Length: 247
Image (cartoon, rainbow, N blue to C red; front, top):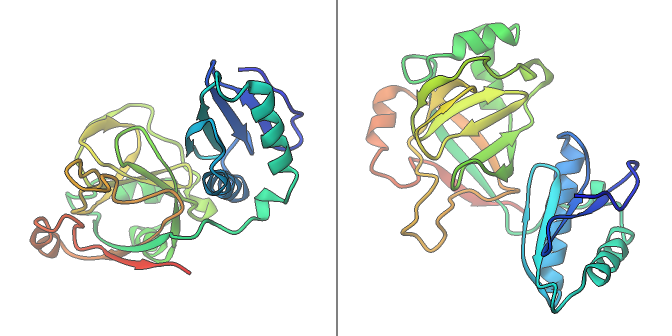
């Protein structure tokens, strides 16, 4: 991919013969994530002829287009014009977002690395759980596995690294932490993220009309429960989570 803009603002890059990537930063930040979400939403609303798909990563908006119908130069001009219309780093987040209140068990054998993670953050386990349950975090992107959300940002104390060795298996619905983010795992998998808690959510439901339970831009709050309560929520596809509309 070649840069077509300077490093001082959003950059437009080609991504193969039928893709373009608009990047709002080289590393994760709240303004860059906000810009990517808002910019993608505006493109969807405008419905440009020839743009077949759009999505976001942590700090970028990706467009897949039909180059036989919409040329690279024409699409770049459209993107340049749209970028100049406003300060996307301060744009309102898209409408139609949800707030999810998700029950989770912390520590115990369902969150076996919470004490380890808390120590790395310079906190007690009790202080760590307080951070996790009092921080409202945003679904910054969906990635790695179907329906799997990356959530952030946490307070600065949680800028802790991933592990240097992999945990052999983290279960579906697990909550893990590193680099000021949390990840809710949609499948069982090896990981370097530290396993701090467990939910009963089925984040990927291929049989549903909307197979991904959470969407980029949604917000999440965690509530602490015990293992028995969690077990009783296993038959609920939402895992006991409550969903409400955000203004």
